[in-house]
Length: 283
Image (cartoon, rainbow, N blue to C red; front, side, top):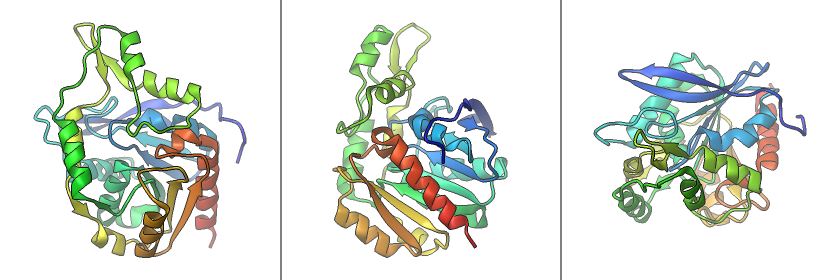
């Protein structure tokens, strides 16, 4: 795997889904295999950019904006659900005719990815869960639902919006250039000239109490579980328990990374994912 970022720049790809459009970033590399990244709550496809650039020379890399996030359309009625996000993911995989692809989900994106396992069937080649769990507990669901009830903050200008931007959770070791890139792509300008966040806060209400035992029991694909070694969202014990629950799973930790592993350590994360995919591809 190259030590430096690929010169391949992503292009925007829009997939129609009924009356809505789903947006993806597409690094159309020369590789035969495809990686599809799914971001977590409050995030968007650009959060994967620094890792994607390291992988784009070997793979075709896609990063999806979930509904209500980034450049994907919002739901006017705010009726976001885990099942709705799952259906969007499955629709994208079928529309682009992805086969044997590597699905990578971070945090809430890991829940969406797990929920999609039965629907994807043989299309799915491997699964990687990044600082994610096999369940959504009541406490976490209540917290995210409460956050989803607050209105989107409004800022008078772009500079104010950038200064106010912060990760959730806040703990991070991400380089300044990575945080700056993420911040620039996590705000948007409204028609009245004010600025706000580039996601619909109502989408946080999609995190309802859920167990993924049934989906995990159906996993036959090689699975990688990634934890940031300094993560406060996923303990080492919880990582080990998750590895016991998923067949064919291996678990690793990325040193120096908190919850947002791909932001804190994009290089080590990309190398770990590449190594896993190469092993999974061997007969």
